[in-house]
Image (cartoon, rainbow over all chains, first blue to last red; front, top):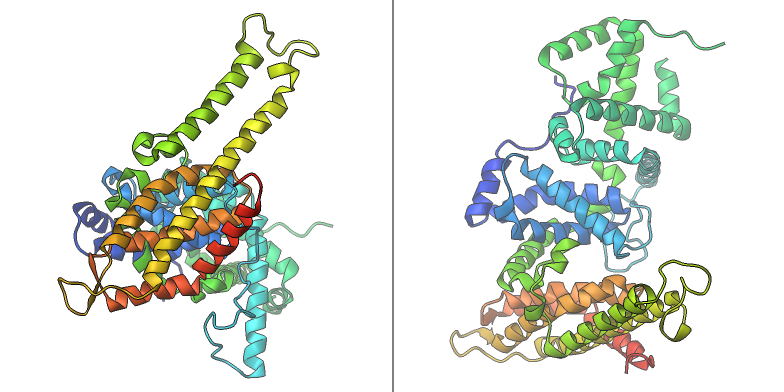
Length: 208
Length: 289
């Protein structure tokens, strides 16, 4: 059984991007479907706000389409897309178009008619949801405490599912820097969880 | 007393565990590390902890609101907006930083707006001339000279006035843009004219043309709105853009379904109501009317 997690970027992204450039029907839709969620997660990392992240991804996708002829296959298409997104997020922050920071787990509760209906109703399920929400909050806290470069590298790898070489190329740093930053980021998150999450700490002690 | 340091082989193994998790180790390294983990209890525990920790940081846990998004609809809107932006030409392309400056402004700005922009530029140039470049004037000199501007007014306050004027112009433009867009949206929400070319469809030629015109105008206000503190207005203008872009790329004869989707968006986002509220409030301000 393979216990490790492989890079999520697909090899045929290059071919897909070529089709987008060539104007093949449906190619851009496929690219959008493939990238939008990963871009959303990265945008959340920059903007800390659900709506702003969605706006940023929309703008980025439009920019990708408009600039598609300027793309050169020296970089992976997602690397290129992630740089456009980063610039878009910086632009939004600079122009104060961002809403105040909010917890990304803040749900639509309290807004009638919005959001999915809860599928679970038992007390246990509610408790499990609450625990997961709590864990999500702690993980966000852990990620937010990372130094900016470490956080960016972690976000690009963990949520953007980019390969380390691509991250190094995108950020203009050495592969070794990416590796060591990723290692430090994971260690910091683990330490943060061990300090703040009693369940995580209990499991760790149990293992010992 | 400090805890005992793990042996060097364990330290080397632990340093590579994150890379193992992300599948970034060469096959030989991976095999070596897994062999070590199998034979060392403390490293096995460490590997288990790292894995649990990184597994816990799953997107659905860290970004639970991702599940609320209708991604199919999101894709559809993104594709429509991208095509509309291209169809509408460079004037409507979302631009940032340097790109915004390189717009063909003469094509993008209506004539009255050009005068407003030129007037602002002239005022700023006059202020700079008086403050720094006027013959006999001093640059950053002693008291009374570094802060002096036109008529002895402090430079900072003159620049502030210039910013305020720019802000007023942008806001005024945005209010006009919203009012014109409102007329268009009311037409879309109201009874549609049947299309002569295809039965069962509706003629939206005029709305489509109007949308394109409005999109071309929007760039003027967008740049200014970025500088505005008025986030509500800026947000409304941006959301409106999405609807206008969808109208701009429709065929002259739209299907009932397409019209229905547009109406639903206008109603769900309460765009008409929000335009009314914002424009009424803005017009109530002395500096807008």
